Amino acid sequence: MLEKGIEALIPDEEGRNYIAQKLEAELYKGIVTDETRAGFLQIIDQLVAQGAEGVILGCTEIPLLIKQEHLNIPAFDTTKIHSNAAVAFALS
Image (cartoon, rainbow, N blue to C red; front, side, top):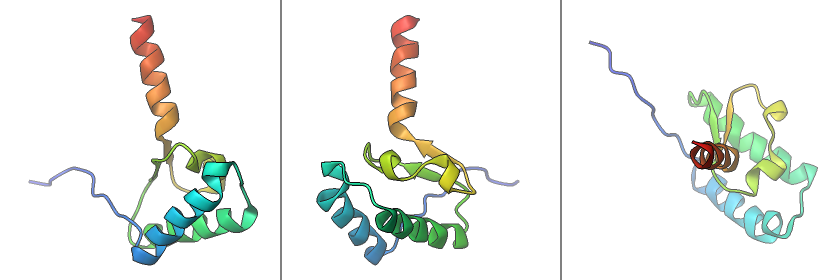
């Protein structure tokens, strides 16, 4: 029997440190640069090379930098997902 499920892949330590540093120094302050976007996309490309089929934009600031149009795999914007669920719940 074939098991189905989701396997989470995370950036390596260098990638995690890069993301944390850029969040604190730039994105939390509303600073969005092409250079930082390229760094995030490089990290995502590394994960795709490991088999990632989608990316979770799991911090509210990341969608300011990374959009679906920047990717060849699905992007899941958790802020948008949670907002849509809250509105649907409120309206039901």
